[in-house]
Image (cartoon, rainbow, N blue to C red):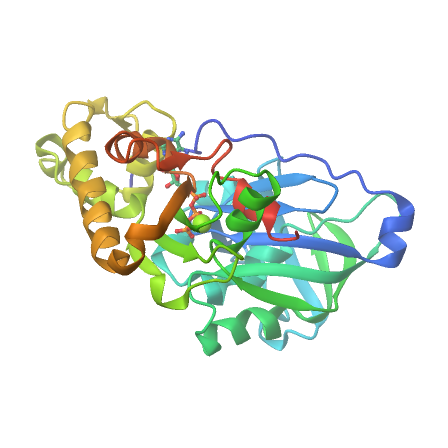
Length: 342
Ligand SMILES: Nc1ncnc2c1ncn2[C@@H]1O[C@H](COP(=O)(O)OP(=O)(O)OP(=O)(O)O)[C@@H](O)[C@H]1O
Ligand SMILES: [Mg+2]
């Protein structure tokens, strides 16, 4: 089996600094359970990310936690399906051959992945979260919303990296993906015109185009689903050098190589740099065509579209073709989660 490689350029899991009084009165947190990267932030601006992988542990698994890996055991609590389970999240889950979230449905994995993001502070075992914002591509899918809200609300007694803690989550809200980025864009005054403006979120699995009216109302009918980096990776997997391999190319390895700029498949030395521009233009053309058709009725009054998500840096041709009407956010991967609490 090809050994998977940790994504490069991972900012370190930052240590949360929260004042005692904030903790006593309960925390507010936002967690964007991405198909590729789990993103977390607090109103004070503390941000953490972890690779979106988990591994359900067998009795012989003894993973070592590190700054990009968390090991959990669920002892008791309101999520009865987790009682007695142990799992790892992050790089060690990837290295142990666990499951990448993009191969499953992230809504149903959310409780396991979100609990990994909550940590205890020195001397404090009982962490109270007054309000937690999560997000989904389609917040009208009731079964998925319920999986997140019911799976997380309540009290959870867990061990996290070997230390006992109790997490009490009082209120969970599921927001539509793109809303956080839109609120972030408004707070930073990134849209020049008081018109219909939009967000194009190019994530790992899902891409979403979403328009908002000039007073900030989400236009439900304007939600266009496009393909994230996953689709680009599927195209790369058809590269003649990769297709000659004995095994099917591992899409995670391809996406990691795109993200870290090596454009080389794992440790095989096979480079797909020669064909990537061609695949990228095909991928972006498809996205552009879908948006053109889906947004036809709003195009005459469209202001600007902010491109966010980890794959946003790949979309420079969309910026050129639209003469800057589409523009790439600074820190595109994190602006969504940062806006979820605004
Ligand atoms: N600098 C970069 N250049 C190009 N691509 C990048 C870069 N950094 C990350 N990526 C790509 O971004 C993707 C992750 O983006 P993001 O965190 O927005 O996805 P996600 O939120 O986890 O997925 P989804 O929104 O589908 O649930 C990865 O697949 C990676 O290949
Ligand atoms: Mg995302």
